[in-house]
Image (spheres, rainbow, N blue to C red):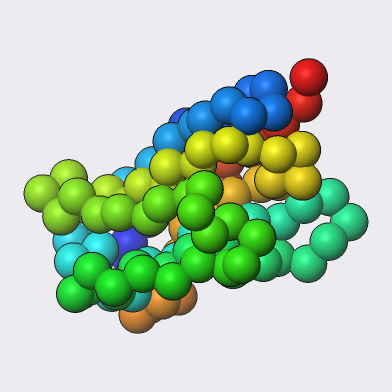
Amino acid sequence: QVQLVESGGGLVQPGGSLRLSCTASRNIISISVMDWYRQAPGKERELVATIASGGSTNYVDSVKGRFTISINNAKDTVYLQMNSLKPEDTAVYYCNARLINAWGKGTLVTVSS
């Protein structure tokens, strides 16, 4: 069973940056579409960014130009670089390996002054 562990969340001021990491317990990231989702308080989980094994990416409109998803296959890790953060980006962020529908437990991002 593959386990995904997210890290890198925290408290940041508006306009700041964070880099989230999602590390798999075994090799899945190189062969699966990987997604970053987020869930804000009182809201449904939202797909934020996707990266395919070939490297193509897709983003929800609200983060385009600010977030970047990337992969390090050697480290079995997918990243989400988040720049120009806004209070509305506050949420628990989860990664998902779509091939096997594996989820991490999430990492909390709070954007506040």
